[in-house]
Image (tube, rainbow, N blue to C red):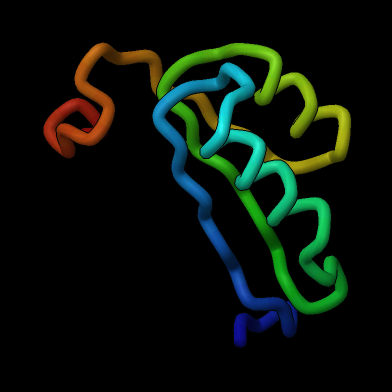
Length: 75
């Protein structure tokens, strides 16, 4: 556990559109116990899913790239 007493979780998804994987991420973050988990989401494009996450108060980060899981672009 962290010093704040919550377990930190970073969900990473390729795009900010709403589809199968993105719907799964939305369901996960909605249902996790906010008193136990601090959830943040990383997406590689903007879109409706990012807007929904922001509306839920979930910290969401967007790294715009065409090569989403290339670690070299993160630095």
